[in-house]
Length: 135
Image 1 (cartoon, rainbow, N blue to C red):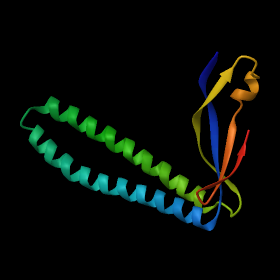
Image 2: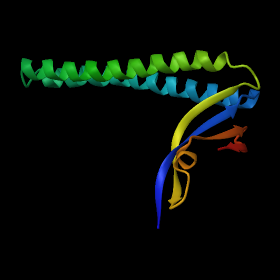
Image 3: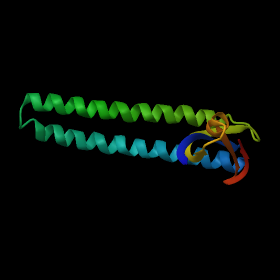
């Protein structure tokens, strides 16, 4: 009998000029998208509040709270991205950058060493190509 379970896989990138540039561009694009959303949201929220004033003060208050909460979330995401951008800019070429941990399926059978099977795996990537798998 066998069983399929998940185990963690860490993706590490070798920092190259191309990787650093690509990651910088992705983060900057995400920041720009948030900035655009915040601008559009400002305009739309004014319109919504004007319309909501016809419904009553309680509705306006509730709507303002919702708008401020969402604006706060987006602002926090933007701040996190700015911090990440500074991190990326300081990365040294040929250093390692962990982009995340993912769950991968693994088959377990009777007689397997569970510690070996469940141990974390690392995948090393350079410019989008897997160059090493470390179990």
